[in-house]
Length: 383
Ligand SMILES: *Cc1c(COP(=O)(O)O)cnc(C)c1O
Image (spheres, rainbow, N blue to C red):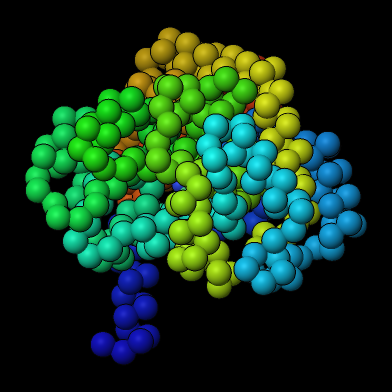
C-alpha cells in the first residue's frame, strides 16, 4: 500500500464510522460564550471550570511577567530556562499540596509520558484503570513494562492484579475525576491496596485540581489520600496550560536526571509561570467560584432529572449525556448548535465503541439562565 493509499483509507474509515474529527476556528476566548464561524454560542465544552482563562488579574500578571522576563524561556530548565518564577511556582505548589517537591512540565500529556518512560523498566508492571486518559494508556503501551488494565473504579479488580507475582516494581495508575465520565476514583481503597502490596499509586488529577477539596487542593486531598505520584494539570481549572508532578525528594531528583521531557524540551515561558502563580492564588481563595460551579451543577442535575434525561452518577463539572451511536451523537450536537449551544460530541476512540456521548461541561462562568436554556433545548430532543 502506498503512502497515499494508506492515508486515504484511514480517512475513509473515519468518515464511514462517523468518527471523523474537524476543528472549528474559535474567534474569541473560551469563556461563557464562544464565537465560531461567525455565530455566537453558549459554551458547554470548556474545561476552564472556574473561568480563570478570562480572569483580569491573571491576565495582568502574565503581561507583567512578559515585560519582566520576555516571552520565552530560552531553553530547557537544564540549560538556562529555569527562572525564579518557575522556582517560586514549584515551591508554592509543593506547599499547597503537601509534598516535598513539585516539578513543572509543559503539559499534562508530557508529564504522563515522562513519568512512565523514566520510572518503568522491563520486568515492572503498570496497572491502570481501563478508562484512564489517552496520555496515560499510550505512555503505558510504549513502556517496556507490560500494561494490565483493571475494571473502572473497581478496587477488587486491582487487588486481583496485585496478587499476581511480579519480579519488578508495580505502578497503579488512575485519575481523580475521569475526563469523559466525570466520576471519581475510590482513591483511599486503591491506595491502601497498593501500599499493602508495596506498589506505588499515581493519580492524574487533571479534572479535580482547583475544583474540589479544601482550597481546591483536588481529589486526593478531598479523600485524604497522598499518592506517591500526583499529576496536576493547568489547562483545566487553572485556565492556562502546563502541569506539575508532585513527589518526594529523591523521585524529583531522579526525574531531573532521567525525564527526557524535562531535559530535551524548552521550559514553559516564565511569564506563564507568573500567571500560574496568580491563578493558584485565585484558586486558593476561590471558595465563591467553586460554590457558583456547584450551584450550576446542582441546577443542571435537578432540571435534567425532571426531564428524565439519562444522567450518569457524576456530581462534578463533567456531565455526560449517554447516547451510544456515533451519528446520533453528532446529530444531537448539531441540533444544540442550531439553538446556540456548543456541546462536544465525544466518540470512539476517545471512548469505547458504542460509548458516544455529549460531554457537557459546566463552569463557574455560566449564569443560571444559561443552564436553563440548555435544559430547555434538551427538553425538546430525545437524547
Ligand atoms: C487534559 C488531560 C491531560 C492532558 O493534559 P494537557 O495539559 O492538556 O496535556 C492528561 N490527563 C487527563 C486526565 C486530562 O484530562
